[in-house]
Image: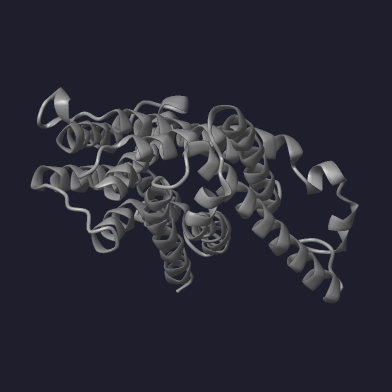
Length: 314
């Protein structure tokens, strides 16, 4: 039951992340890449700061100052607020979000942008699996199969009509997936710190870096920000704030392998949201490519299932 409860919570997080691609696509019509990223990141940081303040007030009201007991009060400020972790994760997030939003804005009209970018971004799950396998042992056969499936799926999605069907936005989204892979690995290094505070600091770092870039490279207007206010608030509050909090809660109940598979459904929700809300259409070959990429994402998680089962039987 706990696994089911966690999966349902993570499913909601994946739904929010997937629909956020629609918000990003809509915002690209009004604001430029780093203006969007700076706005949503700072909104997300502010939201999480409010969540942290409320959480701390509730703990104090209950006579607690930490996650477990009163001993947590002895933690140093450096430990309580993981500044270095927040900066490192924020820098990786700055690169990932930059490539992602730039890719969304680079696609020509008539392309199923939300679904296409969502699936290309989802390939980070395969990249993470490959890195984990290479770090200490040979590639598992299922991981090799997922690599082949991803390559073939990307070919159908991006190149089945020749190089004329490979868009610059596709390359940017693949670079985005590479950066998200780095972000996950960096975040894993700081997994023992307060996750919500780490997220707050990473969004603050990402917002500051994005803001600095947009001031020098983009023209920022109040009218454009107002036009994109709803997408910015949705991406900032719902995607960066609410969905991240749901992820933290859900992973307390769901097994890691189950959690990663459920969260990878973000790509499916991105395609569906683009179809329902933006009326995007995907050709048959693109749909087949998406299915193959999604299948590869799930296939990459099977070794973790097998390892878990083997440990339980020993």
